[in-house]
Each structure stands twice: as structure tokens, then as C-alpha cells.
Image 1: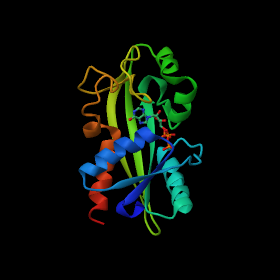
Image 2: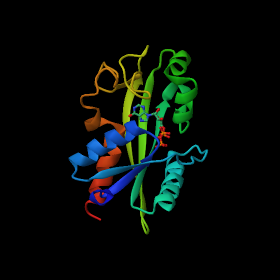
Image 3: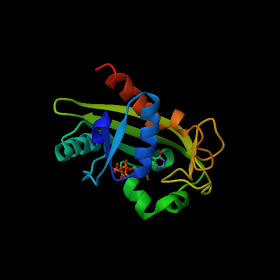
Image 4: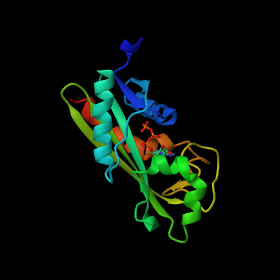
Length: 183
Ligand code: ITT
């Protein structure tokens, strides 16, 4: 069964996997899922966190894998929660973020996808600019109810019909696919 996959997404987050799978399907790459809680180092750099996560995922599973590390960077908060996005979502959540914001609501989502196998370790990034809404809108996971991508007036939770064609995840996975299919 597992033989039909090209590589595996190692993560504790089902939502990230489902979006990544759809995106890689569109590039003809079959992505399996290894649900796993990976130890995350404390660092100000998504890149460093992603590299450590990828190394530990490969040494645990011994198969070609990708991992993803994301951050929501809010301009008026000097980039907070950034590399701490997962922890901040679990603690103060969207409500807590909204309470911290005043007029400047600029933000960006960043994704780092890191591939690791026996001999290769390679990272790819994707960024999506947007704004933080004034209240939570729509039903969606993570920060989707408060993130409005640029050129839209709806949060990702209100309208996710084209999320997988423009998201930070899509942009990083597109770069990854170009590399992976030609390596
Ligand atoms: P891993 O096991 O893969 O690390 P995680 O959920 O801890 O899963 P991250 O460390 O990358 O993943 O955390 C980033 C957080 O940012 C994540 O938990 C979500 O709350 C949020 N996030 C990332 N991408 C998102 C998206 O497309 N839409 C909404 N929220 C997102």
C-alpha cells in the first residue's frame, strides 16, 4: 500500500497534509502521510526549525519525506507570532491575536518545505501577503478565520475555493515540485 506513494508528509497536522496532498497531486506527485509529533526546536528562524524537523523525521521513518514549518508574521507586532505560530494559536488563539491589533493589520504567511532523504536535504519557501480581519469570519482551521489574502476581501475561512492555488503552502510546494521532478 505504502509503495504507491512517492514520498511522505510528516506532521501532526491533518489540515496541512490534506492541502499539501491536493497541491502535489496537481503536479503528479503522490504524497503519503506519516502522522507524527516532531520535536520542534526554539529558534527565530523558520528555516532552522524546518531543517531540524526534517532531519528528525527522516531518522525516525527512514523514507523520503517532506516536512513543513509555517509562520504568520504580523507587521505591527514586529513579525510575531512568526516561528511561534503553532504555540500562539494553541494558547491565545485568534481572539488573542485580534486583541493585540489596532490600525495596521498587514501580515504574511510563510511556509518552508524541507525535503530529506538519505543523501539530500533541500528547503523551499513560499510567502503570501495579506491582512488580519477585524473579527473572526467563517469556519476554517488555524489562522484561516482571520487571514485575508491580498486582492480579496474575504478570509481564507470564508472563501477557500482558490486557497490551494495561491497560498504560502502552494508557492513553496510549487518550487519543491519543480526541483523534485527534475532532480
Ligand atoms: P507540524 O506537526 O507539521 O509541525 P503544526 O501545526 O505545529 O504541525 P507549524 O509548526 O508549521 O505546524 O505551525 C504553524 C501554525 O500556523 C499551525 O499550527 C496553524 O495554526 C498555522 N497555519 C499554518 N498554515 C496555515 C494555513 O494555511 N491556514 C491557517 N493556519 C495556518
